[in-house]
Image (cartoon, rainbow, N blue to C red; front, side, top):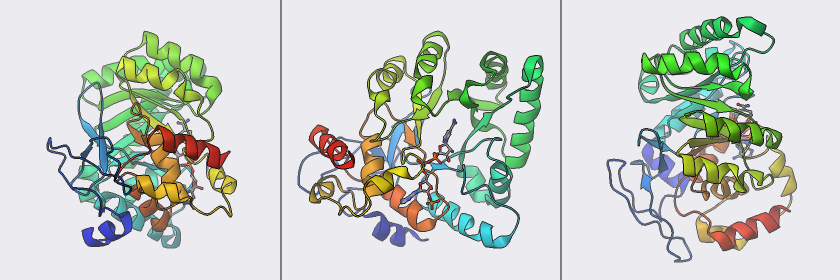
Length: 320
Ligand SMILES: NC(=O)c1ccc[n+]([C@@H]2O[C@H](COP(=O)([O-])OP(=O)(O)OC[C@H]3O[C@@H](n4cnc5c(N)ncnc54)[C@H](OP(=O)(O)O)[C@@H]3O)[C@@H](O)[C@H]2O)c1
């Protein structure tokens, strides 16, 4: 996809484009209401800062659980090549994966072109359930394998998946960060029941990133976890922004309300993603897709204005 196509599909018309090289700009909602100032990529994608380094990251990323868990046949890989081409063509960079996602790391490593490898911000994980006292060594071997499958060194972000064997892996991750084998470290989970644990880890450990679930249907993180991340200067990746696709069922048959246009949303997916990005503690949201059409839809949510408090209340009421 060339830039012109992306501009058409992404609906960038209302955005005064600026570069990530330190410019910021006004985004004006279609209804004329002023919206927050953001740094954007050249293509108009909103960027957010990683607090621990100040590095800017495009706020729409890509999840790989499910769609990238395919075999070697070209039929299942061709659409993923297109997804990656469109993703990097739009100026996005963060791809989240894990050794837990069967073939996803290997598929990514095989599909990323040399140019994409030079742009990508890989967020992968270490995941060693049932390894007992051998967790540290198993984790080291697994992370080495991930880098080799991904054909990517150093990995930008290594996360402890679902907090499994946390202490063993954090020790390695701190050492690896010092040695330059990874650039950032973090932890992940995907359930609200994990929030007390996540908050106590954020309190006692110095983390660059935390990844957890947040969506218009599950807003628990707004109460304490998101404010805490902002206060402590921890970057936030959001998973399950569509609740694994279930949010679309909740709005099935419902026409997109006219007010969605006031913050530039052209689909329910963009409403859901813009809702998440409207929280300033969120650094990047990582919807998973294996379809170019849906990817472009999702990238469009990272452009233009974001919903204000009134719009967010309307979104919550509409989704129920
Ligand atoms: N513990 C953890 O660390 C953890 C846990 C959960 C998730 N994650 C990460 O977060 C990522 C996202 O979470 P998730 O995969 O659970 O769920 P999700 O992003 O909430 O939902 C993915 C589903 O939404 C569909 N979809 C995507 N874009 C769409 C669009 N524009 N319109 C309609 N449908 C759309 C996808 O189908 P199509 O493929 O058909 O587009 C897919 O079925 C994962 O892939 C993974 O990288 C991490």
